[in-house]
Length: 248
Length: 120
Length: 132
Image 1 (cartoon, rainbow over the protein chains, first blue to last red):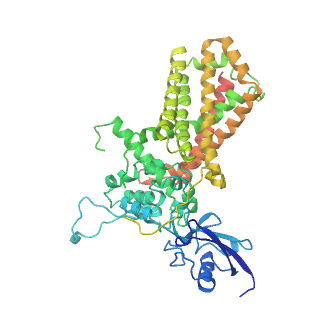
Image 2: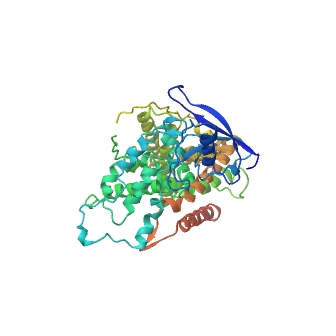
Image 3: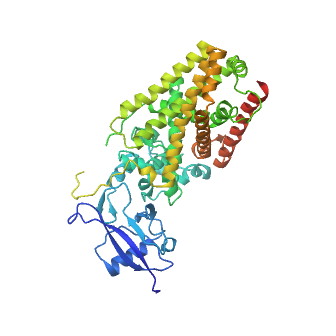
């Protein structure tokens, strides 16, 4: 181990002892191949066992270690210390969510919204198992694949000022997943999802700031999914207005 | 959690979006010729002089184009101003803001129709 | 669901858009619409004067070519161009163009939009410079 160290300024919030979050600075050894999560684990294991944060896979798949690093939403398992060294690093809980403790935020609101858009394949009538799978061509898969990469890490919500101002907004990830299932050739749940996605709290709240897509670690591009849903909903609206005899 | 179904949103967004396209395509070149080229001496002839503009407006198709170019960007702006106010945190006055923005665009539409199709 | 734990809910300040470059540029993009609308209103005023007759139009032109208005037009021109760049720049991401089974690549859609912009500008320029 080298002698170099780096300062990590971490948000602390212990509701039993303080009304509002405070900060605490820890000096941790600087290693070139360390990510921010390694530094947090070092603090937890060697300096202060009371620090709380979420993490699991350490490889950008589980989506649980999202935090604000120097004010930007990042997966801490993919944010390298060397990109910040020698400056002090600020680690805060994901923006726009209620803080439960230290770096742990309350994501119940998102879980409710995720469930509301029904991100699973909906069939009007399920066919019997004996008839086999619902087949899909590579071209049909390609239509939505990009939007199915979401790991629910919530960096997009932390990047979205609209959600920060008014948390009734359904938000980027849930709307992108709604779009993803609507695009799926096997799915028949458009009508059920659209009452959530195209509601006042859904796509119409979005003003295409676009930061959700910038911070997405999986290149899902939720902003594009939302704007496309607007185009689609608007096209359907004008169609039904101009051609009321049409079946939609 | 209940989700409000506002069926007018697609209508306003459709106008916003059409206005965005029209503004993106035509407004820069129009500002250049109507507002900048002549006073800055960038063109020799009087490109927006009385004769030139009158000749232009004598064509019915030009009137329709000018109507579209003037009106749709107003709805575009109305929509963006409405949401800008939301984003500055003005949340309590949602309905008045709504009426003010789109109402302004509707008044503009009336004025444009009056000038282009009645006065000319 | 009733919550059995206390949380701290941070509030976003109304000046959030000053805190990052991207947010600021977003607000400038939105602000472009105000300049575009102001130009449109001046343009309608100019057409109104045109309908009133030669003298009214000349007076209107004198007014609109004063330095204050020229500065306004210059600023509005920059904002309008910024609107064009941001609006057409995301075209491919927003508008899916399908030709039968073939989906046009987003970058091509965006490129096409810019080609359209230059074409339209050239046509309008031609009308102003050579037809009138």
